[in-house]
Amino acid sequence: MSRLDDCYNVFDLREAAKRRLPKAVFEFVDRSTEDELALRNNRHAFEKIKLKHRALVDVSGRSTKTTLFGKEIALPMAIAPTGAAGLCWHEGELELAKAAARAKIPFTLATGAMTSMEKIAKEANFRLWFQLYVWKQRELSYQLIERAKNNGFEALIVTTDTIVPPNREYNARNGFLLPFHPTWRFTWDIMQHPTWFTTVLLKYLTTIGMPRNENYPEPYRRPIGTDPGTREVMRQDSLNWDDIRIFRDKWPGILMLKGINRVDDALKAVSYGVDGIIVSNHGGRNMDSAAATLDMLPDIAQAVGDKATVILDSGVRRGSDIVKALALGAKCVLTGRATLYGTAAGGQEGASKAVDFIHTEMNKTMAYTGCNGVDEISTDIFFADRESNRFMAG
Ligand SMILES: Cc1cc2nc3c(=O)[nH]c(=O)nc-3n(C[C@H](O)[C@H](O)[C@H](O)COP(=O)(O)O)c2cc1C
Image: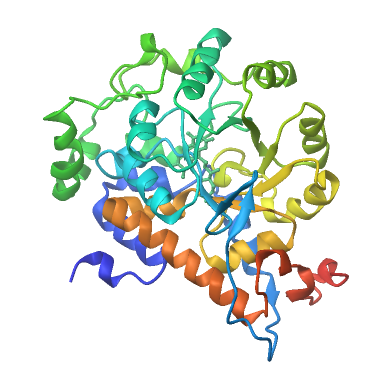
């Protein structure tokens, strides 16, 4: 029996990923920053909400389908941008994008991905979104926007919350820093994971050599881990609202801002003409004291109303989490780690498993709570005890 057959939920896929990946790679995917407060808070925000099941409703015709930006998707979920799928599995971004296309949900390609947008557009084209990290020389960002447009990407997502490089202390402990200098600890780590070495790293080395950040502008498309200068040219700390105005002018498609976690920023985004707001704290990977996104969501969703589409990420691991996010005003969620664990555990098949687990769990939660369609999901299904009495009114 393969390890995937032993997995029954996303947490099992996480265990399978942990066994397969070198510790340094696994911790890069799995962990967050400093004391990992935000990572825990994100999960706690979901876990503290209790639901009331409803009796005797005919839910035999229920569906998780929804419409997002005018087109139907199979469930209110999309794949978040992560620059690490290509380290989890050989051409992991492509595997993940194919799983998303198979499940009929959107896939976001990260600026830092190791597979080019041209290849993704050719081989896994369902609904493609491109995530942009802004380059200090803005002209380089404009080139990427043009490339995404030419490759038929439907949406541009500008990440706004990685203002400075985060304190991911475990990366330093594992010798997993840029520029990359192999340490004895890291070499030993790889030797302990021969399957990963032969099926991922060696496969790259014997075909294309060390993988590159294929979506970086040409002068910076060098083998990963070798370029100490890229950090400087990708500095995000000058990014501001004037940039958003320019991106809006240059990008005719769906424009979203990712990393919004307060009401005034969300309203400002609306006034700059964005189509979507992604309430996100980067999965707790950047500012460790960040408020949980689910806690921020109700006020943001209420203020934005139907002026833009509100999407949530950070902490989604179960289908019931989607139901909770929708009840609090999100139209859709993004998954980062959940689907990366699947990719690391089994490529496209593993990523599909992650999506299927979450889809099935969402479907069952809708059935228990008496919801036939996503538009029937509201805080009416919440149980309000003292801890969560703000939901009482729902
Ligand atoms: C390994 C990893 C790499 C990531 N890389 C990026 C990135 O390049 N750009 C970005 O906007 N977000 C990135 N993120 C954040 C995700 O897009 C998303 O916001 C986050 O993973 C959501 O939280 P979750 O992992 O709890 O689902 C990354 C997340 C992980 C786990």
